[in-house]
Length: 41
Image (cartoon, rainbow, N blue to C red; front, side):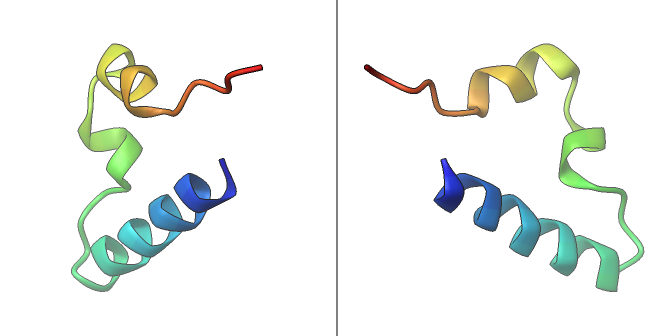
C-alpha cells in the first residue's frame, strides 16, 4: 500500500509542476476507488 501512496505522491507532484489538478480529482471517485489496491489477508 505504501508503494501505491508513493506512486500517487509522485504523480501529483509532476501534475502540480504543470498546474494540472491532482490525479484523484481527474478521475471520477468510483474509478479512483477501483485503482486502489485491496489488501489481502
